[in-house]
View 1 (tube, one colour):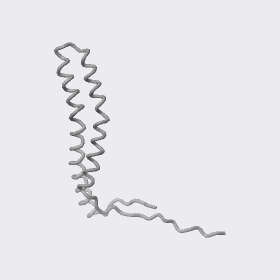
View 2: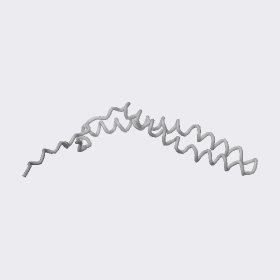
View 3: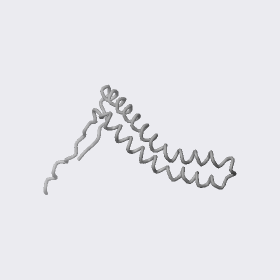
View 4: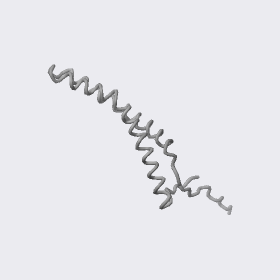
Length: 104
């Protein structure tokens, strides 16, 4: 019978997260999510063309504005909350340890 090799997996603990790095990752992630929502806002603009004239302008401006502004807003808020989240994680991880993950 051949002996089994030892397992190469190990438990590691995330003790600290770099706030600016997490902020950049979250900004890109949320910015891309904002881009995914753009077609829905543009559809709202397209459907507004079938509304009466007095209602059409406001809905079209709102839909176009959201399509242009939301990816930027999502990215900024992703960065801000990523930095804040990393800071909070780092404070809590000093008290209780950190997240344990198993790696190979």
